[in-house]
Image (cartoon, rainbow, N blue to C red):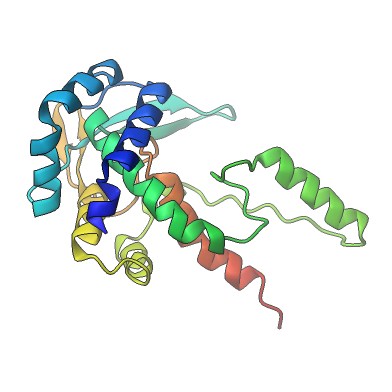
Length: 213
């Protein structure tokens, strides 16, 4: 499976996505406009490290941004190299999981939006339902249980190298003022892989909410 993720066609598409999204640099300072040159020179070595399992992701860089309703939201910015590989993993995993997601799952989905979720809620009200319940999972990305998430991933991913690499990304530290702290839970906002991982773990909630007593 790791070979499919690192297939040049998948990586080329991931490269285009990362470069088009731009974004801030990670802890190594490399910018997105430097990534193509890096890949041209170092891809064979980089790929071999990933295939052999010797690659160690860099820590993410902590950034806090203000929330519209007050307070701050913490982002973890990976290096552009790690964003590239995470984007490649997300593209490959998306083909496996997305067909199973519920049709009324709107977060971080292609061609889906919060506006569509509101319209669907309105349709339910128009057919006779009385209530729409809004649930806010406080600090969800910061507290995702790694063991639970890896257990869910292992149901469909049999390649241990792929699981090990994802685990490394989950556990890669977070750098604050030059000091790296270990991360024991969560999947950082700012990572291209986190939106899909959040939908995978929240799919369990969707399934349970749809159960009828």
